[in-house]
Amino acid sequence: MRGRTLFVRQDGPAEGPPVTLVHGFPTSSHDWAGVVPLLAEAGLRVTTFDLLGFGHSDKPRGHAFSIEEQADLAQGVWERLGIAETALVAHDYGVSVAQELLARDQARIARMAWMNGGLYPDLHRPLLIQKLLHGRLGPLLARVTTQARLTSSMRKILGRPVPDAVLADMWASVAHDNGQLLAPRLLKYIDDRRRNASRWTASLEGYPGPTLFVWGPADPISGAHVLERIRERLPEAAIEELPGVGHYPQVEAPAETGRALAGFLR
Image (cartoon, rainbow, N blue to C red):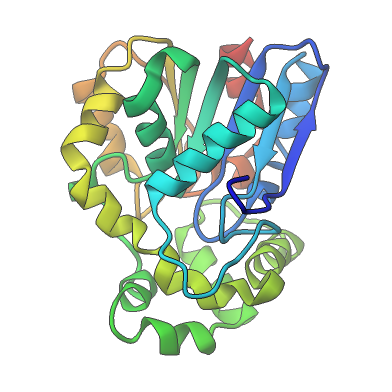
């Protein structure tokens, strides 16, 4: 894919309506493991992939990662798989990729579902560790990142209990090929969001297709305070608010999330 190798997977009937799921930082497409079977059972053709620098996709050292490049690669996945039009579901980091894709060609997106993420840069409330990794000390902190530290950070943004095994899977996706060392470079997406704020907000609010928000209000990063603005700016959009759920609806409440998405995407 433009000289890069990405991990890509498809599930569900080949003739089913296409849907693409885009994951968040710092994990991988494995976040969707509890949701994909429900979407496939609903007859949808589900495409998941690891963004560059994440999971089992290439993790180039010294690379200047950008949301624009990730959108290029998403379009490359569609071209390689022959996907002309698709529904799109985006979470966390993935919401910025989706906003860039909408800004480029909204007609290609049949319907749009958003999950907890920094849709409005002024409302983004990153954890202290994210701020530090994004700063001058980032490379040093990345070298001392461990499974225990990642698990501790995850517990702070989850609203419902998640099994240790699930968090271990998250760490495995991050640590594959020493991917934790890339966190400071991947966190440059915060700068991309600020630089593209007007354009990406316009792509979000100007999208004319069916729109759904599946949202965990207990998320301290992009929770109830973001949902408040969504209701104000997008009054016609459908909203599935999941009580007690935090930053990862698809992990904390996979059955509820899967049902909400399947009903909307069918």
